[in-house]
Image 1 (cartoon, rainbow, N blue to C red):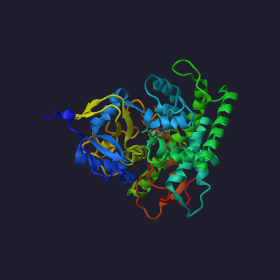
Image 2 (image 1 turned 135 degrees about the vertical axis):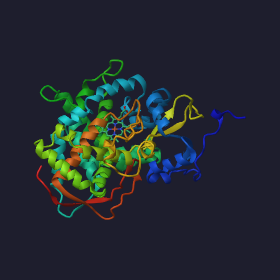
Image 3 (image 1 turned 90 degrees about the vertical axis):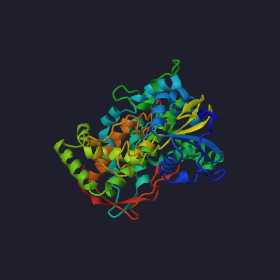
Image 4 (image 1 turned 45 degrees about the vertical axis):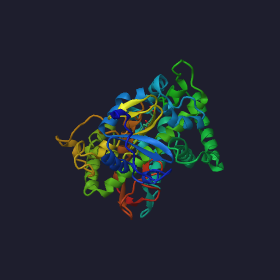
Length: 447
Ligand code: HEM
């Protein structure tokens, strides 16, 4: 008789070669949830000819948090991107001591405190965009929010908005995510003249930002992420190369243009869509804004409905429903052996939709977090993934999202356009597509 561990891992039925590629283009989390219910906590899929092992459920999240560093590497996933950026030390592609060391250097620049110290900038940039809108204008959620978010993160980390460079940054990030990270597009995309020109412009910009920071050290201003990279040394005490710092500069602009912008799109959509939520948010934001004399870190901490709206959005619309990795050595999981060298997706978003952790999981319920019987299971909520590479900007992202939505809802009268039901596209990260839009109905209150 075969021992349990040597039994073949259950396999999802799918098309030859393409595998689940078409299924993953829309709402990959709920596709994995169906497979989890059908096949259990570990199963195998095929994606464009590659076998991938999916680990799903609370135990998978625990494994990633506890043992991820021992059994997984991120290098095969992000190494191509690092190479494309000319960097030999790109944070997301590093493992072990080099990774831990560089994470410490980048911690301050990406922290909640840094975002809170820059609340005025986040507010002002949001308001500046609102003031360019005309009454009745239809604004696509995702591209509109991408522009706002990227300018904010640019100011925060490098003191520069990205402005007209946005399309080049987006081309660089998106092409590399598709070609290098998720490997859904062929390599020749990296040779296309349009892409190559975008890459050159991003590198020229990053060089300018680097030189400026070298020439203007933070003597009479707050240090930023770029200053910390310029002053930092690697785990062996050697200064980081210019290419590494420049990739860190581009990385800082990349950090939110998919993640924060997409989450914010779903958050604003939910605020406008969930019955009664907009009225509650308006009442809370106006009340706290006026009693606290504006939107301060202290005011944000009093906005419980807004905070719960952010949490429910991260739970129901996680932009990283799974964390891709490669196993460095064989291990046992739920009675099966995962061989060394396997491509593995840890579907960290699955517990978000399981009723044992979130009763009535598909209901967007901002009151669930204040209910005494809401289970508080460690690792069940994992929108920022888990373990060594957990999002370094999670605290900053929360503050940024709350500030941006509070500013939008305070200053602008917004409504849902038609169609008013969102689809979760994944290209490559989940987002509402580039067309789905809200409507600007006029100014509401001054900043
Ligand atoms: C809603 C917003 C965000 C979400 C959902 C999110 C999600 C994630 C996830 C899932 C990872 C892990 C990737 C992996 O392990 O393969 C990650 C990593 C990272 N995130 Fe975020 N992120 C968000 C916003 C931000 C922001 C605003 C910043 C910067 C201010 C940021 C900085 C980073 C960095 C530097 C890493 C790499 C950490 C490492 O490799 O050690 N993120 N993020």
